Length: 128
Image 1 (cartoon, rainbow, N blue to C red):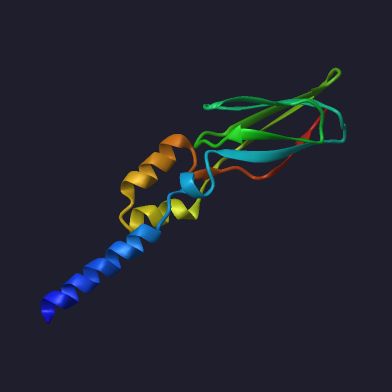
Image 2: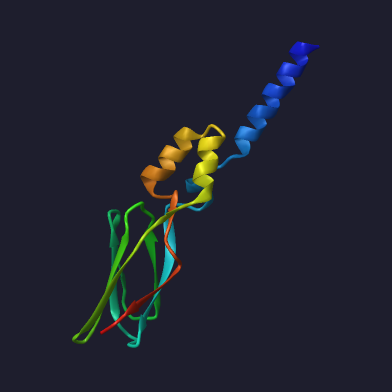
């Protein structure tokens, strides 16, 4: 009787662990970001972090970047005017779920690929 109960608890525990998904499976390593410039429109922007560089050819515009723990640096130019900003990444809550429910390997993978992190989806840069 006790052995059957232990088996059922073990199966239940395994089932619960199988429901925890890592961020790379649920949201991926890339993220779409919209960039707007104020007061000037039509600026060209470069976005970069430790995973690469991406370009918006004219603001307002969107680009898909690779998520990372590092800051996302943005430089926008229009004519002789320029503006820049640095955006900090945030850690997604599901990363902590991976750690709590035994998915340390999944959490480590998400952190190394960048899928454990997120940037704001709308970014505004002041052009002076």
